[in-house]
Amino acid sequence: MQFEVSEEMTVRLAMIREFMDREVIPLEGEMLHGDPERLAEAVAAAQAKVKQMGLWAPNHPVEFGGLGLSMVDHGLFAEAVGRSPLGMTVFGTQAPDAGNIEILHQHGTPEQQDRWLRPLVAGEIRSCFSMTEPETAGSNPLLLETTAVSDGDDYVINGQKWFTSSADGAAFAIVMAVTDPDAPPYRRSSMIIVPTDTPGFELIRNVSVMGHTGSGHASHGEVSYQSCRVPKSNLLGDEGGGFVIAQDRLGPGRIHHCMRWLGIASRAYDMMCERANQRRIAPDGSRLADRQVVQHWAAELDAEIRGARLQTLHAAWMIDRHGAKAARDEISAIKFVVANTMLAAVDTSIQVHGALGVTDDTVLSYWYRHERAARIYDGADEVHKSSLGRRILRRYAGD
Image (tube, rainbow, N blue to C red; front, top):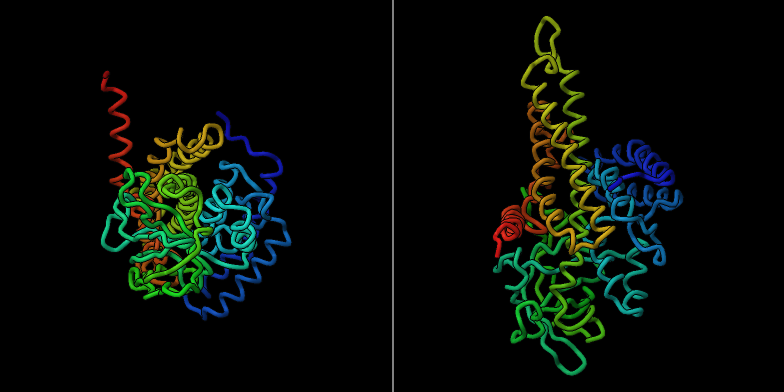
């Protein structure tokens, strides 16, 4: 098992890191304190530069305008751009579009790909993913209540969704709904494309998260489907294939999330170490970095981030070599390990920054608010731990 990085990828990563420091991280002030319209213009200008550099949409298929990176290479890319909340958007790999692109590439018809996939990869439109419901457990798609009833050549969709991220301004949603309530549990649901201008599709509100409602891409919508009629040609894959498609989407998606979280952890760690060396705490000139407790934090976090990074790259390598199904254990493990490592790095960096850490004068408080959900979405920690632990113990059962 080797994580050798090609010369071409090494050059790309150097270009990305330099661009992030020069063009993207300076935009965070506008994100935290400025005007949303000015920020959107600045992000669009940065995206145009990324396209000129030939670095746009690196994880997406070459035939649809991406670079077609391997899972390991995309993981390294996600780590590099994850150092800023704006990085993924600037490089055209933001969620939920990235996951929807994978679904459309693997399960979409040529007509669906021409209408939705190509403009999505190009950044001409946005999308949303509509699976989680307010009254059912989000970690168990078998409990879905939203229905898509066959009516001639159409499906008629009824139900309520929330945490449909980026629904505000999206051109279409990929909706998971029950198409056959009498089928075996894993064949009850399907994935269906629903244009957001379809009568019956209503964005009720952007859900306020940690005091921030958000808008546009940076939002989590509550969506109502009321007799929402779409043609059966909008079905993705086979009827009843929704659960399988969800697994195809979520497995690789966890690599993207985890490496992005490692980018956050690394930058929060860098900020912590810089602050510890700069902050004078006594008349004799001693600094935070001279205190043993801070030294212990630096050592422990360094070890935890290095370990989480290698664990994630190993999971990516497994997917590249053997597929996501063979990497189930590795994917479950990194989901809770990396989320907690990232949150520990952010929290400790805030502690070292003191009062400054809880203000919006740095990006740390933004991460503290917006990344706490890392332990919940795409499967809560407890779900992954139970699933992984159960599989491990079965291997020792001897029967």
